[in-house]
Length: 447
Image 1 (tube, one colour):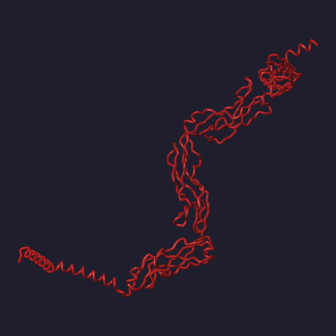
Image 2 (cartoon, one colour; image 1 turned 90 degrees about the horizontal axis):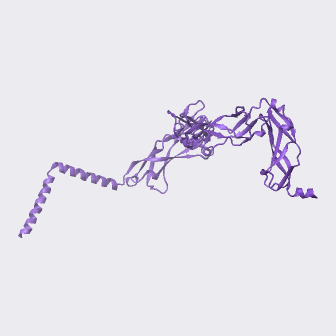
Image 3 (tube, one colour; image 1 turned 180 degrees about the horizontal axis):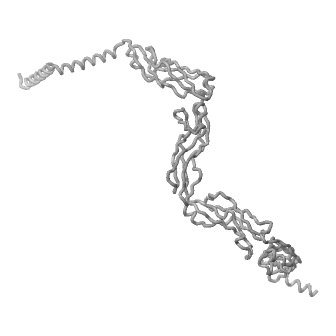
């Protein structure tokens, strides 16, 4: 025998000896036997056509509502089960392939509408029925369904819209301002669900309390809380209620605030009229804005000037708009101020004067008044007014204020009262003036 062939035979003999020795080991032999038995059992079960029961679990329950219930707006808001287990029988080759998608569990819901009063939800028990879906595996039988019935809670569906109330409590530090009501991302919330539960909702509110004084703007997301007529809270989840917005974003802008004085722009006021006789109501207002902008203002001049010549003993009060500078808010919310002139002790008198003169005639021109006298209303202290005569009144026609002084023109008149420092003329006056070339007068005289 060849040496190489002899070596191969010896190696093969050694392997056979090892295998035989392994089978002599009882433990290894037991494990091997169990594995073989398991494989054979699985093969037999897979190829067996024996009929046996199988439970298909978690088949969705579908509730079919009657047309009458749908027209009445009835909805099911709660039920005891969402899925059921269905027992089927048939060849194991078939039943092992059946899933929840191949089955349908249904219940018919046809409630009595008259049972619903709007005060409480109603309950009903519905029988469940399991069937095979079309176009699926059919070589098996449906035996039973568990549970056999499902309990439902139902009511008419209702929804209402409520204006959100803000029960937001906060205080602002001194020299700061925040509006009384915060800014909301939405001001309306829709509450929907069972009619009986919706009917209990009296209001919807945002409830929050800031523990510290505010010195800067704040933003937060706040839960919407429902309340009944007694002020008790209503849990939406427990009452099967749905809110269009369960939370709402709240913004509280905080700005600097400052008190500013109101000042009236009074024109043509006599020096003798005491400032203490003029009052402005309100004397001050509060403004708010960013710190840099607000700090620019210590006073605000009223929007329109007052002509003191319009002030008389019978006309002492003027309403003037309060200006609001850009970037500033008038948090006093007063839009007009009342300016009052104290005319106690003053009287009014009408005097006729012939003291009318023309000044500032253009070069090369002559001017002559055709108005020979004017009736002037004079106001002053009673003592001084009583002593005045027409000679105390002087009317001046200033042609420098006229753009084209020529021909017959009507020109404003400035009235002064001499020797009566506490008196002044009220109203406006004009005089007729004839303006002609200076050369025309001599030639006419020569003729």
